[in-house]
Image 1 (cartoon, rainbow, N blue to C red):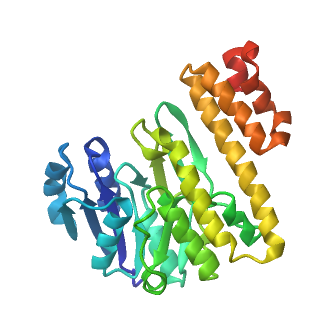
Image 2 (cartoon, rainbow, N blue to C red; image 1 turned 180 degrees about the horizontal axis):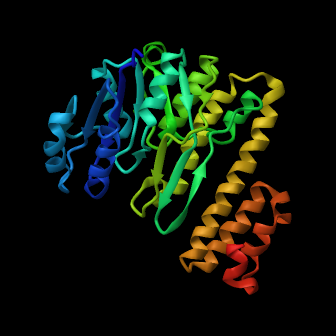
Length: 299
């Protein structure tokens, strides 16, 4: 088999506790045509020493100030020579055998693939973030239906649609998928095997800055909603409200687990402003009834 060249870019900044495990999850795949690039933002936590150790196995690495995650990824992609691209954050992982699966998909003509990913860490039980096939293109405009850690695309798409937007800090990958889907008219092929793993930890943006994602995501959705037919725009507005309510309930559960009961109850109540029918859900009953106690929240 003629294995396609796969370029993986890892942006990193002060992630020394996780960086080596991330590097090994890529380098130890044994994939015969790998180009691995690491772009560090000038870390001062021991990351550079790790990169020096693994430097002979990397195609290129650098540690210097940058303008954020998107800028770091773009630096890597500008140097990329592969026909398949993906990026992996320095606290996430590729699953064993992932690159062989990716290589086979692209050797058989795929342009863009996405898979479920394993979610782990921060004292939570492991669970799977599913990659959901769309029922309608409107599905893309209430939440991101594919996880970044399991997503790969052809270099031809980057040449056609450009790099990641450096003005985005939180929704950079989501905007890129919307660009491919709504401007390019391309659907990702959904792979059933988990290709990546997403690590939750207290310093990650997803855990520590969850609410900061929402304004940026709303701005991106508003931009791309204009590309939809009128008949679908109302549906996306409703789905976005439901998605916000669902995220607020997830945040409320986190706050309650942290012992911040009043904050959790307020957040749960705010979810009902966005989607009142959610008040009938069993989960909401547990969140809004302090008398139900911890067991109701966990159920």
